[in-house]
Length: 478
Image (cartoon, rainbow, N blue to C red; front, side):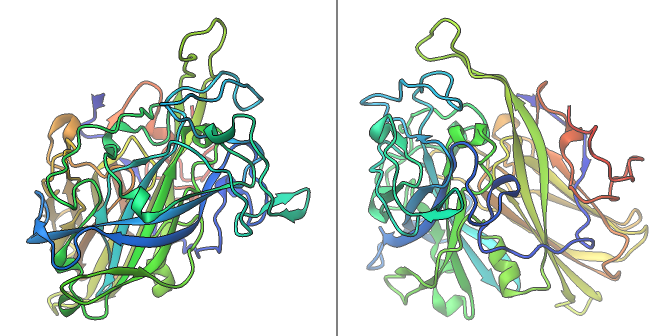
């Protein structure tokens, strides 16, 4: 990995666009009810929560968390809304050995699903991630039919499951696979650091994580973030996120996260129950805008190229073609009157890295020079249970003469506490300036010869700071 030190790219202009969460966000412009081309795994339902630390069985939190911690898992019901089966390799019993247009070589042990689980809290106008899990590695698809897993069959809704050629080593078109909360919380699970979410590297390794406490590898949450006595009025949201390199290669990896609201029971059990309906194919950050329509939300994309990998085991002439994927961040902002009374306005930001292996290690907000700014803060979500990442908070610089607030990750090489895929960080401050004439930059954490920051565009015309104000981004992606 090459480490970038100072390069920045224009991130977004939150004042220009407000996105409204659709009922279902299908990949790359495919509309609700359509059939995605190629393999496309989604989550149609989150189906129950397991509590591994009930009856007050909390343990001292891992590094980066406060006090005592609990552990949970959530069930995920998958659905293939694509036109061809999704690889679901079981590394212990075999993988697909057939080929088709989207699968020019036989499957490898990386061709299987992994499932991330995240928990969020909306409290006092701040939407924060308060829990994340290791990854549950998929191993077999049951390929069942379910009326909720509907796909479009030449304009006609179809709820039947088309049995795939490779049986349980694929998720067939219109087929679903149920992973209950207990299964998603069973150990060993795999480190997120081992999976290149938008690319080729999905090893089947599920060893090495800590299992000393009941919460280890599961969705770890600090007790103080759940206790109703300490969180009056708070709302909670569980998110499931499937990652399958098969549908990422097909350009269908942007609709793999779904969320559902949850409630937290009383002490000492702190049981979590799901309520309402699952918001399909939509990351949980949209719950903030749903609760408060004044929240502004934009997508921030970059294109990353990957070299096609050879068959495993090797076979003459069997290599996947080169391909590229969209890596996506979601950025949200809310401006309200100052809470402290020291300044006129309070600025709250949440940035969610959905699937960018490139990640981010800095964020800057720019005002006109000499704007009074203060009371800046930061909150992250820390990896745990044996992940190698540092847990240091980002450093904050308030540069009033130049009108800037700068957050920067503490450099720890490859293990820097970057904004990794499947995580959301919070940034806030107060200022004596209204929400106009602001600009934003996000520092990228990784650089390699296959991707360029010129491909990292906000997709919003007119916000580029280096002379490309026309909004024409056609030449920005190599």
